[in-house]
Image (cartoon, rainbow, N blue to C red; front, side):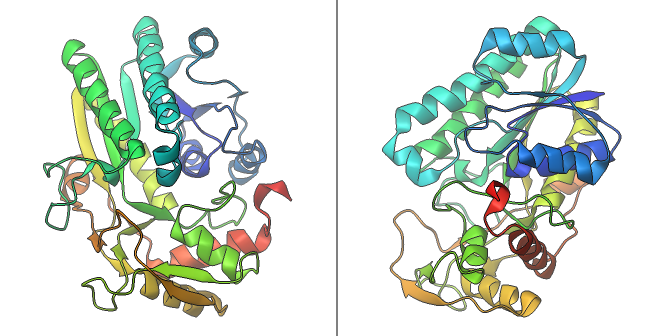
Length: 337
């Protein structure tokens, strides 16, 4: 089966492409390279020893997308393409709504026209309301605090409505928690443009000297050490969860939301300490005030993924830290070097 991977040159997209190729699937990548680098796709080919077609297109461009479907027999779509920075979404909300919703709508139109009915969506734990108990389960209350989260929420609803109207459509809505790490080869990893939005890129860029010190936002939460607790998941575990979702799609119709996390919480200070232990590299840091909108704790309920997908995260925090450092130390300036 050929899987169309939109946004396939990005962080999660490249690692998922590796998992798909190693799982025996064919891969077709579509990416406009706004937030990614084509060099990452060459590295995927080196890791797997397999070639695959790449289309530099905007997924909102329906004629261009129709060409991809016409030239390849696509059996499933994995949709990663989209704008993804929470802070930026507050500054340019209309761009986020226009891009993230229209990529999904265009994909669904072209899939319908081409007779493709398997859709795996890159969603997020940001769709959950902050008033839920932990760990978060898929039937928890939803509600977002920023435009990025609302775009994920709205795309989920679009897919539910599409699946209600088309009884052949199977949509799996994978709600990520905090993906970190990199492929064990050190060839691909997270390479954010500008100032990173996520913690691990800030840790490794500080460790390698690209940043003077790391700011730890909030030391007064009601957690064991006062810093925020998150559910960190290795990006290759996340990628393997997507591969498992293909098999689920094949036997089910409708739309199903499923968390992808570990169910284990790690505080910011614990992650920094684990990184220093795993790598032997110190990370200068300073405590800073809380950021608006941050919560004390965010953990995934994982039972549904285990039950429906037969999937469970396997890699621990030490592996996540070591793999992140291997990527950054081998590629100090990311793919640009």
